[in-house]
Image: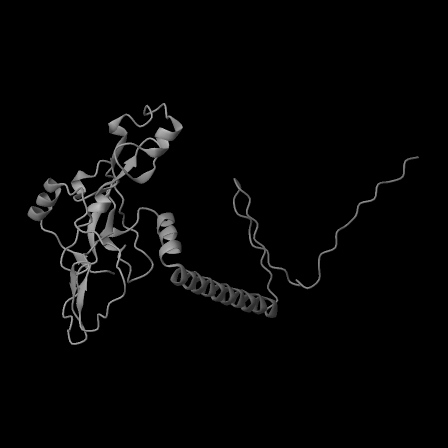
Amino acid sequence: MPKVLEIEASEELVLESDAIEEESWRVGPTDGAPDLSDGGMVNGVKVRPARDRKVTKGRPAARRAYMANGTETLLPLNWDPEGLNQDYGANYFRKRLCLCCNRGGFKGWQCPACVKNDCTRCGGSTDRKKVIPCFYRRLEDAPLRSKVYGSINCFLDSCIRRNTLGFLTEVAMRLHARSRHKLEYQAYTESLAMNKADDVTELRKRLDDLMASMLKNNVAVAVSETPGTPDAPLYVSDNPTQPKRRRIRRSAPIQ
């Protein structure tokens, strides 16, 4: 799991009110390849050698955010070349979602697909209510928030989707396992199949032992069950090895 940036509520409000619309830094092309073994300047940025520098604490690589349906996600952070400033995921907060065609990831307040197809449901993406942000800083701001977590845990103990972050159905858990834990889930299903095969083998062995014991004692049990009628009594034959012959009644010839 990447290190997540923890943002306080007061700082989140400041970031939201500022509404960052421009990138805080841009990297231009580098002319030539200077010797940077002892440090130097690259596009106005001072580069220092790091061979004698120990990194005691890593910087965050992502921040928490929420999708339109209330699902928690992580957004990558863009750092400047010196590693001092980052954009708090502002580039992802500018992405939009169209409720008309369910297309997401575009910027601006018009859906390119609806404009191209001249959609009649949203008037060619002229209805501003049909376009909403893809990500939100707070869970209570998500407009399509619904119950997305349940009591079914992921089969993998190290997965985060457990306890309060479980799944609603067994099918959702299996889809998650097949996409997120492909190799682990394959080994898990194979182990379950092997255990099931062992149980069937043990059950067959017990059944064979029971049948052998019954044949050894010359006991035959016949149970007849018919719906709506009482159970038939047990019949124990004195000589079960010899089948009972059927008597054939012959009619008298017609004169």
